[in-house]
Length: 564
Image (tube, rainbow, N blue to C red; front, top):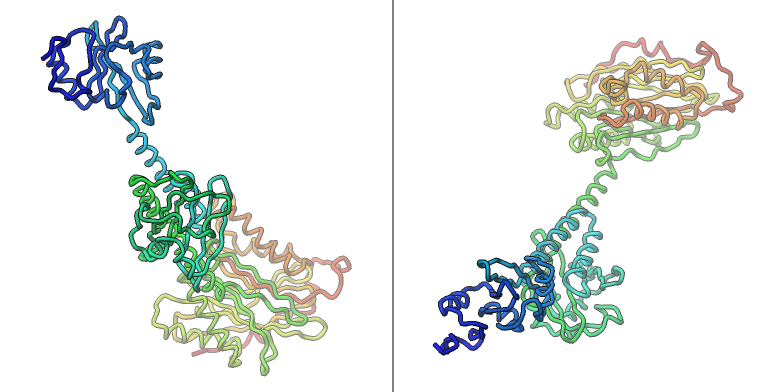
């Protein structure tokens, strides 16, 4: 111990001079602590002691100077403004100070380098933002764009997302800070020109940035004017069982570099981005597959036979699925059977399972049409096919019929029903008649009973086939009342004189207004109309049915036919 109270055995930085002798035990205790402490006099703010940790953080501070006029501006301001804390940038660090009173005559400033904490907070905030934005959409292109935008905003001056090769080409999305997103494709052989890219696309662990020669980066990777690349980082984008792509990060400037912390953050971000891109790719593939499957399940484009109008309308219970258990179809005439065959049915259930059965029923009907099976016999064959499928509780209600053009602009229909609501006929004067066709459910019992019926339509008259989703749609003032057959008849009657498309659209809109956004079942409609021969403005109306063409009662009086 020297005369001034210092210990010659302590390191040089620990032998800070003090204005007045201090107990060696106190100095040793402060030097041994990991906290940075600057001891000051309460009266004039003179610094009495700077311990080892404080000297390492702020070597400008020394005993004897006034803390109120120190080189650390934030410390000086805190003292002059009587503040007990401060946070400021100092010598490349984020410095925080807290004042604690040590009796009446002394106080201490406890300094802390919060740079690592601030960096960790920034990394946490970045990853939180990345997770939120990447999870916001399942659009594949948007996921790629978001990945590039996040990378440029937090990790690098430029980012390129490269997807795995397909058909010997790889798509890429690129963004440079302050620019716009570019996208394109490159040939598979060009991937090897970027150091580490082939390995990253193969799912191998990323090569450390310091091992990659940024000077070997090909000119096509980044746009002209980017400047010299100082640091390059290529990391895989892990996906679902296989890589979703690779992320290329570049920093401009000769002194640019990726620290170990930067590389670790990039790997964590890449894992989240890869999961999002992989999920978006899977969703895209599922959408494409669903679209292909739906193509044969969606209602067909209706043919327009000469002298006959055919109008269809379909609304699935689940709008996102677009298909369901209700369906209609139209089969063109064949060489041996000149009539057009129509069908409208309702498969039990709704959603994907009902849509699958719908497809099978439609294909069965189409096959029967190709072998010239009469419409009313189709029901018996379809019934047998469903029973032999081995699936229980799968049944169908169905109306099938033939449509032929008759003389004087008339249209003649022969309709057969298998447990389906009977079609309605709209006459020229607004009268609505029910077609007296009936039969047993299809797919329930081994033998079917069918009562066919013939209908003739005068010019301007219409026959409507519909599914029970129309009459069972719940809504109205209570929200639970069914639309019902009476309202349907009234709605159809109000369509007298309208074109076929307008009549079907009016009924659809009235039912939609009745439901007003509530839950509903699938709804299918198929209208057959005899085209008008005279303008609507010249056609008279009346209170009674003036049509000379009505339902053929003689045919409807026939004995029921048993089908096997």
